[in-house]
Amino acid sequence: MKRKLILTIFAVFLVAIYWILFTQNIQKNKSITPPTNKSSFFTSPYALFNINYPSYFDIEYDETITILKDSSNKGEIIINRNGTNFTDINSYLSDFDLKRTVKTQPCPSIHTQYIFFCRLETFENLQITQKIYYLQISTWVYTISTTTPELYDELDQIVKSFRYTGE
Image (cartoon, rainbow, N blue to C red; front, side, top):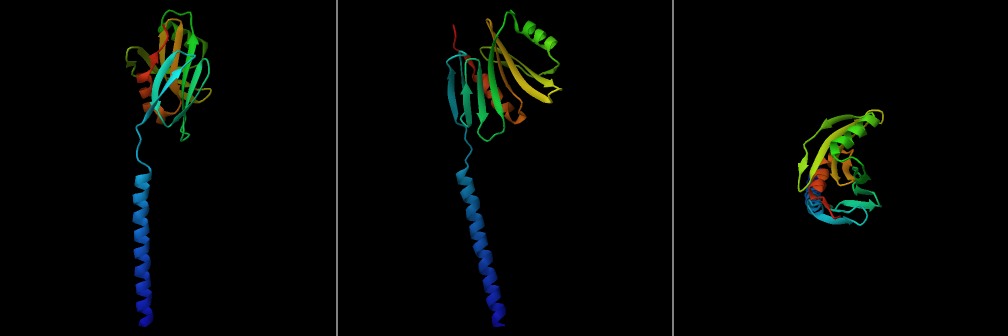
């Protein structure tokens, strides 16, 4: 009888300790990982643009390409600048499509002070689908894209913040 009482008290004690530690751990986790909506600002000294982007991205850039890498390794968003002799984006894209094996599907364009033409491009031979925005400014075509569907919202946010800084 005495042994049963000691075991019961010990079991209740263990359950109480487990419950306290478990609820404390949940509360700690809630306070450690608050959602962040902070953004950062980037100006490309070479490609003549600036953007706002979520601060959990790291940026690498050179003269023509800017890569925003998600710090949780979900994927990346790429901003590229190409020169063109075409006078409009439709001619540029028609030429692009003739030279490559790509299936395209339109997606909603974004209108800021610029008109970004959007589409989903699937390169079946590479098994890659990307959401890509095109913007032509004079003799430059900017593309902003990702192959990671989980980053589509961030891609849209970056496109909306895009500003050309050239003349």
